[in-house]
Length: 226
Length: 258
Image 1: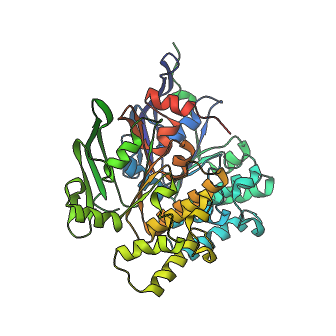
Image 2 (image 1 turned 180 degrees about the horizontal axis):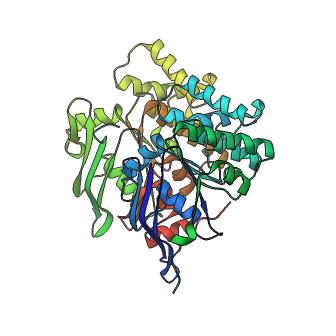
Image 3 (image 1 turned 60 degrees about the vertical axis):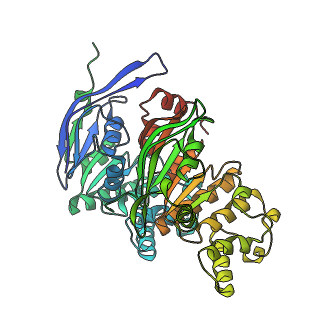
């Protein structure tokens, strides 16, 4: 489902003496349907950079990233928008939303964008919110005022409200208590069973061992400094 | 996905004497897409918007629009009545200053109803009902329908302008700093409103702003302008998070973090 080949990236900081910072060199791996792969490596090794490149958020200098039959490298903005809408979900660590929009609608949005009718999208959103223990009295409020753990669960609900064929998870259990953590891991397992290809960053080792089939150490893709 | 863009802009160039307004601008816009244009004051973003909307004569280039009856047609070379009809029906323009887009001496309901009448609505009761419906969609209480916009706050005027523009169900909206000069709390309401209107009505929009937070939340794609040229364009979050051009890097790194 996801195939990364010969992927390389560097940053050029034009306003800081045009410093060139190589961050990824010849990354190669693939993830099949129903498989969950963990990216590991110490801080700064390039885990998040790799995830962002796969999502089309960072530009790759060379190589290919195939998600289904779309190559993210060199794809038009329109192709990536379409890919994100239909095929590729991303649960980030940060919640970025239009202020004032109720939590229920924030979670329903991926379905609405696909043309799902409002009532159905909202009821699916509510189902996930209650599964993730977000109290019903908060559903009409904007998540911008929520606690860190609540915001993270809203993000997770958004990522799981639609069955994306491919899913990227950036520390989905980072600020959760034991109970919610196991609910999230249950969602990951259900997605795998449906055939979703998942790439995740899990600092929580027990969580990683529970849901991941394989680990990929990104240090092998870190450019060697001469 | 539709097979044809709604708007296809080719080689738009506008000179003010020997000074460049905007130069060789090319892009397309697809149905349901929101394009943001950012850049500092004087970068040519408002000039470009005015060229596209036909408010300013261009020196070179074409603006093809997917018209309902005749398909792709260069709007800069349409007859005047044809273009005027387009700007009353399928196009809308939201000005930075609401008073530029409103008739200040006409009631709120009249401002909304006027655009309906311009496309042939005649039944007073229907027009009034439609006006009330739109005032409520932009969160202006129906009891204010007979008030003039002069009695409204800046944020209300802006929402009234949006209602007036969208009542005829346009397919393309040009917006020049739609949230500029408004309180942040009012900005957020307006952003929410614009987002849901874009989704519910399948609108396409071109939004000029210097506010990067606004484009991040509103625009699918982004063009960065400097000295009349587009220096970088792409997916909004990609341009903001991994800018490639030195000017974009400067622009993004200059934003104060809240």
